[in-house]
Image (cartoon, rainbow, N blue to C red; front, side, top):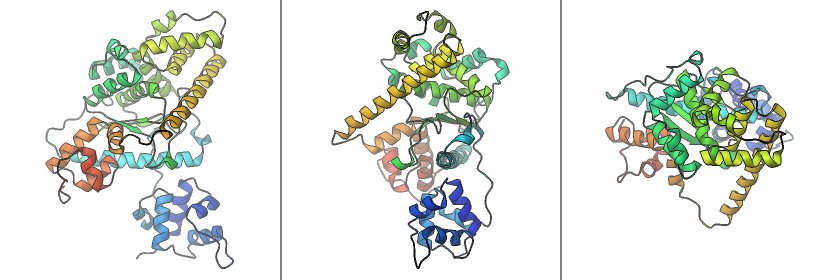
Length: 403
């Protein structure tokens, strides 16, 4: 077995956002023969000692790196997030960025495998709308282009019985034109759950297999806005990570404005009746009624009011704080309700929903055609090969040797 480059060990730990003390604890490197766990880890990272195969497997798990990466000859270049559209990313918890980088590595691997298989399909054509727009075209023009391409109808969106139904219809229309819409909540377990501070959405612009990713842990009423926001990024051909609507980055404001204008035109915001003197007791109910009637989030309406200068920055912050607290209370209440029930939703059904009909359907077709092996199909779906048949609802186990 080849020796491990100690610089790789240090790189893997630091990019996972773990200080030596935390890493030693997670890796179960304890004190031995008068040497502390931290000192034993330092000996591994300076090359004095070599890790055992078992320890390397634990490192791969805890540092969220493929096992093979520990046998690289040199530290790889920093992973490309695309553009980081979040405000002040350098002030974020390093562990959050480590989780995000792990997610992006996973998403790009899955996208690359899917793209390669689709390129072998003679029926595959590049999507002309990816990268077709620019900010100089203006908010309305870009929004109209998106709406025309996906067949978006504001009236139909609002006529849905609730925001969930409205999102499902919007998602279907987006997937029908060749964009893969994924909901992602974690990296496989609750210990790697993504907060909305880590990301709200991700766009991976590609003319063959474009991905629009939504943080499943965000408020469900915000999913439609986030999806339209990421579509604006795809139209601009700008891959990257999006954060809260408070971003002061120009491209984020543009994509926010495109998405919010598609859902709620500025003229309607101007017509929204508000008290002359700002008062939470009367402003909040007015926003609630307005948002409910349009199947949009109250936070988005508050954002539109702020952008239209109908509420001040401090007032907008007060509204945001109110909605964050309300959402946190609702989330905790739902957790309590779920814990009281003996059974939860079927895991395969939930995962199919998160993956989306487009990704599941395309993977099923490519697997049956032999363009994807079961192993690669599992990588595209983010599951073990043994679970592929259940996720794709295949009547017979797929052949493993194909592709």
